[in-house]
Length: 126
Image 1 (cartoon, rainbow, N blue to C red):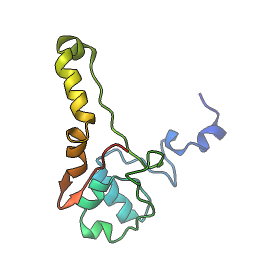
Image 2 (cartoon, rainbow, N blue to C red):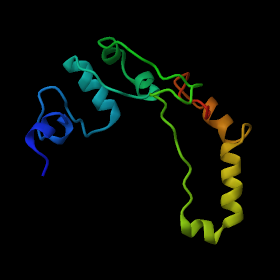
Image 3 (tube, one colour):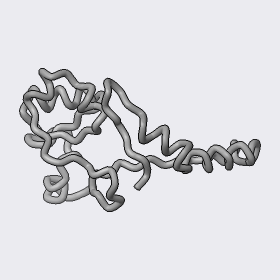
Image 4 (cartoon, rainbow, N blue to C red):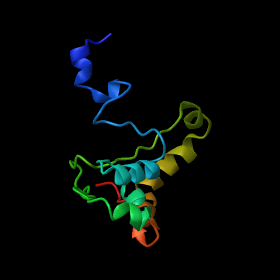
């Protein structure tokens, strides 16, 4: 058990905190709650772009991630994971998929052109 003084410095370790709220629902609802309560939150561009104007009009963006900077603290990378069983059962298909996924004209092209409501949501790997 951690000492109380240590727990006080880690607000998410407590059941209740006056300044840190865990919002265990979906990102859209967390953004709406932050807007309603005049609080801060972190969210991705897709949730922001898809939110209603009544939600976003009460919020201000302090920092956007820079898609082209691999050292950006807000970079939200994705990883391709290959399960042991699938790799054993279909090694050639798995290797080909991973090659396609990281290729500029394959998976990276899909990622960098994926849009919703006219907004590009993601960036290719920097």
